[in-house]
Every structure is written in C-alpha cells, then in structure tokens.
Length: 400
Image (cartoon, rainbow, N blue to C red):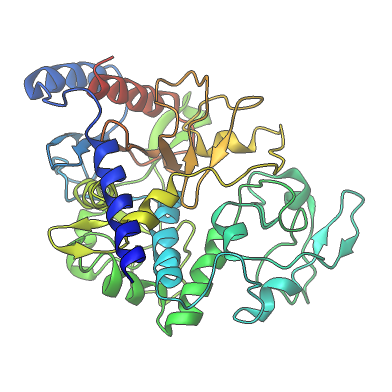
C-alpha cells in the first residue's frame, strides 16, 4: 500500500511539474480579442468559439457570430456544438475509469464482455471475409489498432456492400488486431464496453461519472428540450453556390432514444469542453471532483503505437486538424493523437490533439499546461477557413 501511495504521489508531482514548466501564460485578452475579431471578419463563417485554459485555471474565451441563423442570437460559451469525434476523448476517459476500478484490463480479450466484437470478420484486399485471429483488447480500441475503420474515409469499406442479412453491428474490419492503425469505429466499441460493464447507457454513465460531476451541463448525446434552443446551426458548403454556406437540414438533437455513439455522438459547449480539458491538465481532478488518477492521466500522453504500422493513405490526416501527417512521426495515446518529432504545426512534441467532423478542434500541451479549443459547426471536415482560425489561435495563445 505504501509503495502504491508513493507511486501515485510521484505521478501527480510529475504531471504537475510538467504543467508548470512552460512559458508565462498571462494572456493579453484585449489583444487576443482584436486579433480574433480581425481574423473572423475575413471569413464567411457564421459562428466560431475560441477558448484556452491553463492548469491553474486562467481562462480566455471569445465567441463570435451567431448561434442560430434563424434569429438574432449572439454566440456565447454555453451554445452547444456538435463535436463529433471529440466525443472519443470523453469515451476513452470512461473506459479508463473501468480499468481503474478493476472491471477490465487494457490487454485482456474483450469477447468475454462483447461476444459480437470478435465475430466481425476481416475484409481482405481481394474481397474475401475471413475471421480475425488475434483477440481484440481495450488497448486496441483506444488506439485505433483493432482493425475497425470508417466507410466514410476508406474506399475498401465504402465499396463493400453489406448484405441484407449482415449479422454484425459494424462494417467488416480492415485488418486483424494489433497490425495497423486505422481511424474508425473502435471508440464506438469502447462505448459499448462501458455500457456492458457498467449496466448503464452511455448518456447515463457520462452524466453519473464525468459530465455530471464536472458540471458539464451543456454536454449531452440527446440534448434536453430545455437546451435545444442553444444548439448552433450547422452550415454546409454548397457547390452550386460557389461554396457558400447554407444551413444543413438536421434532425432534432435529442429525444430519439437511439444508441449512443461513443466515437462521435456528443453535443457540447465551449465552456464545458474547456472544463473537461482543465481537469485533464490538473491530473484528473477539478474543484474536488476526480474522474481519473494522476498516473492514469499521464498514461493518456504516452505513445502506444510502437511497431504498429501507420498506413500512408492519409487517413490519419482526418484527426490532425488538416495537418499533413503522411510520412511523419505519427503517434497515438490512449485517448487521442500525440505530436511526434519534427512536426510543422507548432505544437510541442507529446502534445495531444483531436478534432471533430464539423470542424471542432482541441489540443492539450501538458508541458506548458495549456489546452486550446476552437468550435465551428460547418461541413465537410477540413474547412480551410475554420482551420486557419484554429491554427492562428493556437499560435496566439502559445505566444508564437
């Protein structure tokens, strides 16, 4: 017991030290306001929310534009965005909570808890469907090395026509477990695991163990009717109008009772997501609420890929905020991608980052103790104007 306490104390001290070794983070709010206002007015975006927070709670936010296009509704930090794949970080934390509680380990086969996961076949390049040989583990799911992909981003999966009697919960896998990194539905399966082991649906689990305790009251899979008016309008670029933004028809954001996607289903606000990342910067505890132990938080920032192949098909660019990563030192932790050496994006080596399909972005640098969030709601992913705002804001808060 004494050795364990010393280890926990050591991990907490290391994480705290890492968060305090960076540059002075006393931001000039007025200067940042002027720069962002100028940048935003040079875009055609209707809304953009910018936020940065330090480990000790210094916070900067700036919300520009309108939350809803159908009425005069100035954007503020409680407006709710569709954060798509930024859901993955929250689901990964939920899964690591189960590891801390001893309900599952990172490296045991998961078919004991999710029999269906091992039954999903592997789609070979020649079109054959073969059973997987290697057991799928939670580490595989959290690092996208399980073989599951996204049909949206992979030609082989998008060309595969699911038979009418397809018995599986997902598309076939692209690879056996542990061979290659493939961006895909792995975190959805981690969400199914959380539900199976906790006996709760994912919404209830998050509200009980993460978003509720942290006071993230604008973060939901199914947005309550009382908050529905805060969900921002989603814009899409219309090729018939030279790429002009038009409102996209979207179903109501709540009340469907549908299955929750641990990889892409959440709605959240700038204020809420900053609070979540501040908790991570503080080693898993914020305002007396602990969601992870310090040593677990530290493990989220450790590269897990090792000898795993990262295919040079550009799929990793989907999580890199538009950064060209092909041929570079691509790394992945237990919740997000990690900056490698020699990156051209300005982040420090080891910083975590991720993004969402509707052009929402974040990064977490535990060395300087700064987290950054930028939220727009436009599609498709990789919108040049949204990306430029994100890149510029990151540089601003770093003092570049």
